[in-house]
Image (cartoon, rainbow, N blue to C red; front, side, top):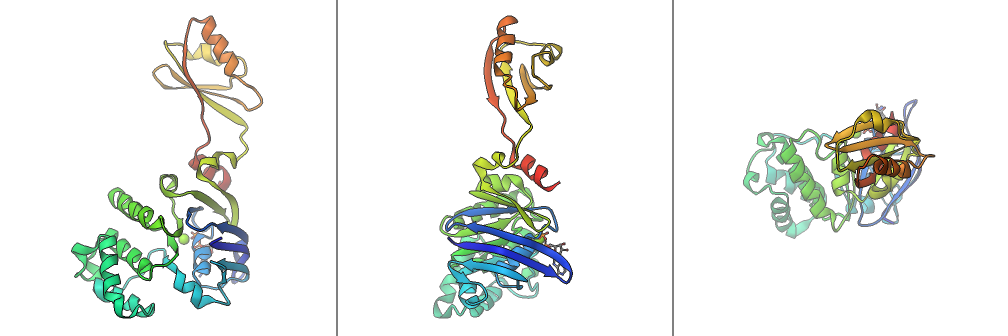
Length: 303
Ligand code: ADP
Ligand code: MG
């Protein structure tokens, strides 16, 4: 197990930012860390990376305790902080040399820097001052910094926030590429991002973990009271007729001859819809159950 967080509590003064947080992240997984602003995401990430201390609890990274073996942990973690603070007066290469010094990369540091510049697509900007870089390139530099010492674990705090849609896709591709060989925990507000690149999702709300699930099973986290079924008929049919089907609570037209039915989970409305179709000389072309999306689960758990 790569990251183990056990009963972590964090107080800032009297304010409890993390309230008995426990979760594990398996080696090699890309995990999305979701939560509304102020939920405690950055606090949790700063604790794992050793930037701030926890009030109580235990954190292990690759079996090393973050308090007892803090240097060992830092060596295997790459961290991109939220709103990555960079010295705008420094040059790109100068900054990476500085980071290489911190990690004592020694004589192969130039090779490593060249490799990271290439990997993160910084080649055309490598001789510029950081202040001259666009936000997208600053974020690439942040990733280059986080990856320079070839860490096994990557902690990325809102790596795509503030970027335009093209930059978001570029950074996302980069994370996906480097994430193949690493354990990655990333926070974001973009649900499609989690669906696109993460294996699992952890949702935190007001300092408490409210869900941890594989992306494909996220719909099962919330117990649904209503079921949603999408049905496509071969011919036009009126909404008034459809709402009269036994058990149906609500009908919404979503496309030509395609309807979304809502019913209580306790009722199986599929046979009723089928009988309705036969009686009215309609054919059911397709019928599928609509599972709750990550976005809907997130809203339910954090509202
Ligand atoms: P997130 O990253 O999910 O938006 P944070 O971890 O930044 O949330 O913050 C969690 C809570 O802790 C918030 O209520 C925030 O105001 C508070 N907080 C964060 N950092 C500090 C700090 N240095 N001092 C006091 N309170 C803080
Ligand atoms: Mg944050």
